[in-house]
Image (cartoon, rainbow, N blue to C red; front, side, top):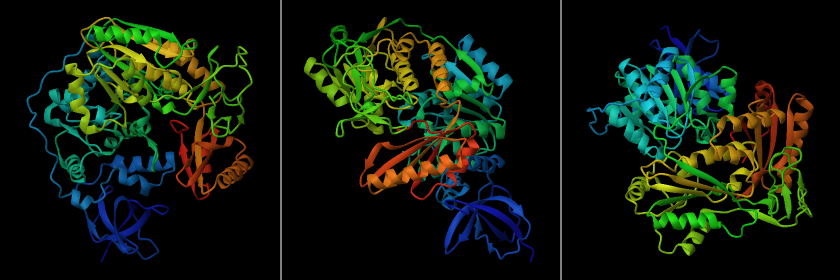
Length: 637
């Protein structure tokens, strides 16, 4: 009997993940099959037909009763393997549920009957941008000011795709905060909108996946980065909302950035790709400068409510709340407005700041802020490992008074409750908030049941709170002095976004107060004036001077050992090997990781840079056991 021989990508396989099998019937590229691997039954996808091999093959067990994946799926899997060195067997499960045989019998996702559709109305500038994108096609950076109406534009673009019988994938940074976006899409596009995310049950996710594989009508798929891997043969557009957000990078294997994969997917399918943000990343701005992205702009808010932004110099202040912020809170409460206080708790580790001039201890080699380790009495750079004691006096002004920065929302809440005992206060961070609370919390805020909101980055991400008339940034420096190459960029982005939370409702004018020990820092001054282009010009010049991405490629490698000495020794050996074997690569470290000890293990890292990405890929192939590699990480923490 004549057999068909095929190479199959085996889902979940590490190492040798493409195996050859035979079948009694012809199989197509992209067909989902069950195959034997050792003594186990696994699932895979046919990569290609091959000639009869010289070795004995095993038979395909069964074929899953679903249409084959579109060709681009196998192409993207191969590309991700080449680009991230992740392994095709590790990548395939992104596109495939754990039990595709069960998914083939799953009930399609069902929701409310939302066929009646409203109309989306665009401003002339929004309509101009939409027509420009549709006519030119390709890949776009949409730089839209906060409140400029990017969401209506996304909805109109998706509607145009539906009219052309094409599907759209809309990526959002966090599904728990995307309720407003989803509601707006459904008002206009009805039951064409399908949601997928990790908070759904396995059965619900299988239903969405099956619907995407079998439904002939076009659809709009909304979800976090995982939604990108919902296969559609009619893909017409990919939209990345808040494209600068770091949550689009997956930190577990397979490590990838959804922006890069979306670009490759759009290239493979001919789909339109739009990466939208009020504060595009340095990476995307660089791609625009290199003509790899087309630029579309919405520079003005739809409703240009007045807001006053002031910087409060904290160098001579005592306590957490300045007199200016305390007075503004008092006035806001008296006028029955709503206030929002923002603190970036991620900067909880201490940085050393001179109270006289605002000087911050930074590494002389890397120009990255050093972290104060109180247990060892040392300032340490987590890039290159250099360390020193606390200076006897400030090298800038000669002062001898230091402040160790490190605040959290709980401390701010205690301070505010002591000052304003009769105010209704809501703390909104990962410790106090769950996805189930979102709708109830938003209703409380819109009814005016809450006087003061205290939160972390979660409250900066696109929330529409029309009653907020005062925004206070308790300490901008905790963002600014995180020891990372992107700390200036993140500071600007967060400040720009948090400023955008004020002045979104009918009450005008609104006020924003930014407390800082560095009132003249360019990230803070440009953010206060919403001067993105000026900030990015300085940021890119600094990165080019230090050969940081996007002017180089970067690899973070981390080892795990039972003892600190063992981790340090392993990192030292690898650094010596790379320096001797790869002269084109720059090696910084060894140094302890941002969190050196987790549980019973110690973590040390190397930061490796190279102009050629292939050099870093080659290094990843030679890493010893217990080393983790991340090419082009979004941060070093």
